[in-house]
Length: 277
Image (cartoon, rainbow, N blue to C red; front, side, top):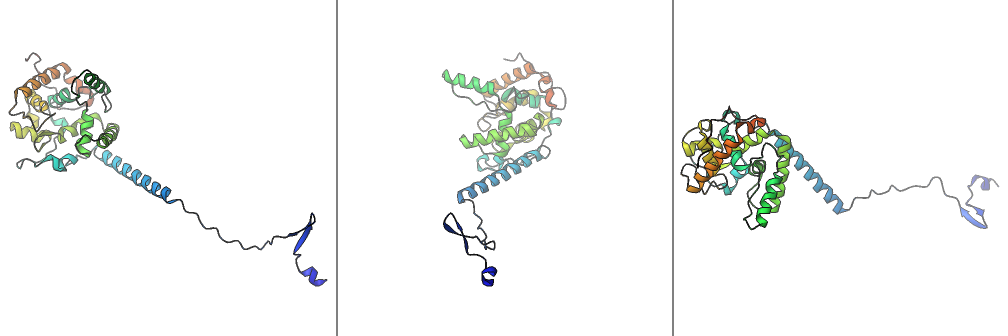
């Protein structure tokens, strides 16, 4: 009887069947932690790396709002070729330039620059419509897009490069003021084989500092921007002269006030004659 009382019953009868009691002292084995599938872990690592890369690039772009880049990616690429041995890349602040210098570039390359947010959709539509009518497909890149390409990327026509260019363009349009974008463009653009920046261009082609460029010389420099390795502003061909005269007329029509919202230039541009042939 005592043995029966001291010993826990092995089971109970329930519904005509013996049911074993569960021990309250059951030893539970620790569950093994399940690891995420390998593919998911790889995806997480890739997304984390991309996030860190994007954060680093955004921080770099924000820093370049105030810090002048000593070089651009294109300058460091083999495609840029050797630089002129007597020239160094000297940064020229835009507020020390006469207003007709940035005005000539805007008149030649991107007249809607003060208005758009990095992408000139109207020019893109016009280029596509002209191409449908049989004209050669022309580029519609803005100054912002060219700045992003020159500073951060390589030159080429691949889809990857164009997508990256769009991302960098949106970033600099968001983090930089318009005047800073134009200043960087003037200092990283190529103005001849291995000639980078407006200061080097003025010294190489005309033997003067950039702040002494006349409106006619600024128009000649802007005229060769589409093909700086083919044409020369100091030895202009007939096509370059014709384009430079067109740029001067556009500068006169736009006027110095066109760039007033950008707060660039050291003062009003000298009068540019619009009646030149």
